[in-house]
Image (cartoon, rainbow, N blue to C red; front, side, top):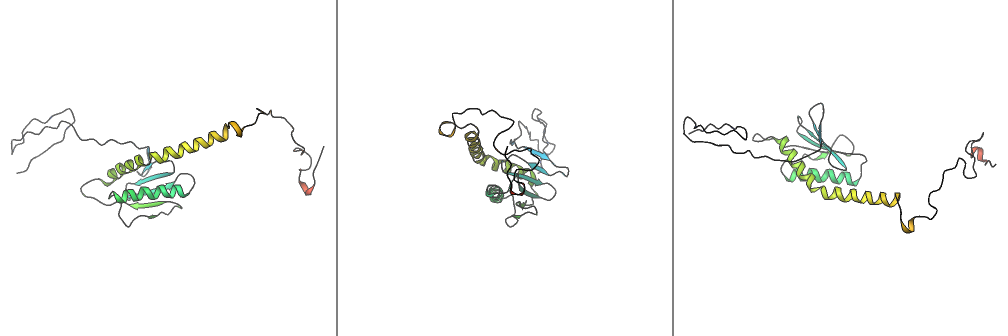
Length: 194
């Protein structure tokens, strides 16, 4: 015995029995999966995820690939973040086990998304990436706090790292080497004095 089911909006209800069985089906609310990512769409439809501090993630919709690139400079931190992402996705069953490899861009990693006939792999991959981003929050907050602390230490020192001179006014001419002379100060090994 086959039952025809139609899904309607949250506020609408299906009260009419199906023709064959006489069973009433009522849809009260749909299951929702909520997550947030800072994404952009490329011209070709690829989804770029820019939330992480060290890496950018690209989900290639047509190619079925996930690629991770360094944001600014390549370091152990960027490679570690890329490797953690792809291993997390492999462990969750999103990436093919033997597909994680270096990409054609220096310092990038990529992995191939498994194919599925029962679900949409790209949507599931986005959900798993958002789960991974939530595991990375502590790392991102800690490294950002450390960077802020070192910036504060350099820009506004206190105690033993500061002087009593206060603000030193800028003058037009300082020091013994003349900057705007006919000859450069170190030209031919000579010094010019006034």
